[in-house]
Amino acid sequence: MEKSVKRIYSILSVLVLAVGLSLGTVGVAGADMTPTETLEEGIDKIVAVLKDPKVNTESGKREAIEELSEMAGNYFAFDELTKRAVGKPWLDMSEGQRTEFVQTFRKLLELTYLQKIRQYHDEKVEFTKELVKGNRAMVLTNVQAKDSVYSVNYKLIKRENRWLVYDVIGENISLVKNYRQQFNEILQKSSLEELVERLKKKVSALESGKVADPE
Figure 1: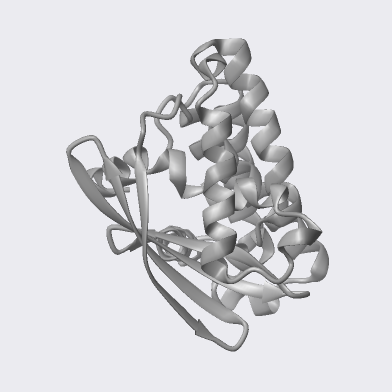
Figure 2 (figure 1 turned 135 degrees about the vertical axis):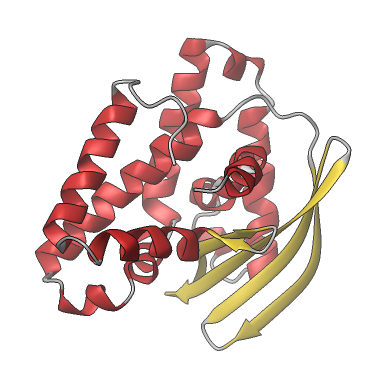
């Protein structure tokens, strides 16, 4: 990944998965929320977790990561995110292969971004626009981080009357498209099975701490 991309996602790592990780707090009461209302409530909940000083301690950070990961499993559209990141090869995958890929990719995302969480430093989120077409939506936001302002836009899909995030675009760089490019480069030289094995090895390396700054 280019240094500029890594820098942007490092800066936005606190918020990149914030919405998906915090949607678990919406519950049934949030079923009729608009995309923007869902994101607003979600971000408020994630900020509540990050404001706790315990995030600065090793044990507290682990607790926060476990809490956020549990929320993500229930309300983030990892299957939609993964399908779009894989692209056309997804159509040729069996249900078993898809399930395995989704689970592995989700773990990779969590290890890549959640490990970077830190205590909240008063970043401000401004919701600027909401675009809805059928069961798809995009919410545009600006994030004020220290002396800089970054655009962070969210793509959502509506399922069973609830909005779920499946892509995050930071400074015009799509999380989905970035991984799709990486996956395509690998698939041009190897098989889908080999790609999954590479992801599993990356996950294992991250879990063991052998990769400090993952791409």
